[in-house]
Length: 253
Image 1 (cartoon, rainbow, N blue to C red):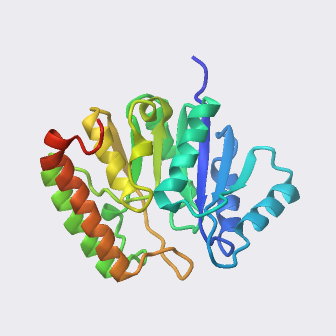
Image 2 (cartoon, rainbow, N blue to C red):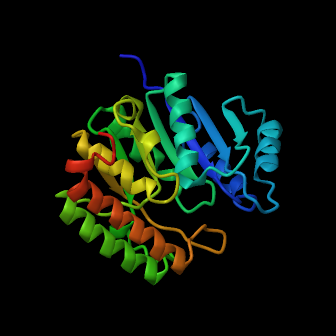
């Protein structure tokens, strides 16, 4: 059996202070296992040198595996991932693993995250922060409470038992991405829930590993008001799938 071809997708947004540390950590933990590391800078409207810093890093260490791109305009949290997914599928990769450019998720978990996909035990994996004492890792209390509240409702309405739905440390088999219409769902933070709904709908296998959490002044944490708006949209999405979709087919499944 041929080894699986793995793409590590680094989604970056205003990461000029953190991106070098993230790339250093990937080089220490997973560089040799990945076929390619794709970094996509999602075009902040503010002055930001993430792209330039990443390109200088590539040149300094002569890293042929590192591909650095910058969106012409901001695509959103989900939209940036869609670009990476389509890239992985087009290039014929077997697995895509996602790391955030702000350092919130440690690349040290990549081997454990990806192995169940390599072994074909699951179609999607994510890092579960909740059983790993996220408050100790700096997660804001309001975010922790919101996560618990949303997860309770999501599990109840979807008939599942995931530890959480909102972790950004994820890995997907490209064969499973090929059978879901991920391009149709949200371009913002609701993306993470919507794609899980798509996986459940298709009967695909989702696994999780426990991870620690790291929040500091450079972590991209949405503010409380935005968090409430995202939470409401997540509930709308779940309720729509549970109660409206059978009549209106909102998700085009």
